[in-house]
Image (cartoon, rainbow, N blue to C red; front, side):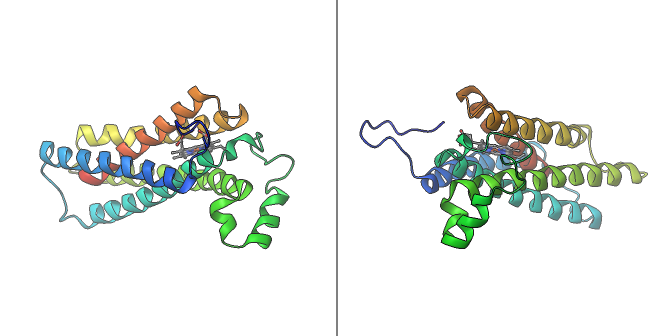
Length: 207
Ligand code: HEM
């Protein structure tokens, strides 16, 4: 999906692409964070359970950022053009090229090898989905367990969005892969990552 505007060397360094993408996400995240803090200033930080939920939300954010960085790697080295099958990589759960590249190139393969990069992005997606579901259950149970409800109507809306948003993003990723990266699916998949990021920033400011 990515190409430089130059005519001789049109490829883009995948690490620079990842830095550029993360810079955009962080700039948006920080602006959104400040705006939300002004709109909804009150916090329940004194509550021990909310503190734990807050910390867990940061863990989800870290994992999401890791996944976004690897998404940029996949796009940058065009790793979405091979193993266009799901759930397996071709006929195997782990393509033989993954272990071969790791044994041949070591740690460098984690950042540069097409098979390894795709392997990391597809399997980290399961962890991201599991973490979003866990955050949903955690926040919902915490809210329902209290006599005095802790989450306002707006915050509950964000909680309810979590499972739908992450499943949508997962599915967009799968379709992007099995159709070998048509531009519109690549864009939708990138937009999905942006929405997930925005939901988690909202969560961080609100719980
Ligand atoms: C659920 C969490 C996921 C997140 C947050 C995520 C995020 C991203 C991001 C940010 C990109 C970079 C888009 C760009 O810069 O153009 C990307 C690319 C990509 N992702 Fe995901 N992804 C997820 C799941 C998946 C899954 C489950 C698959 C497939 C099994 C997948 C396949 C791809 C492919 C093939 C690309 C490359 C698209 C291109 O070349 O433009 N993703 N992902």
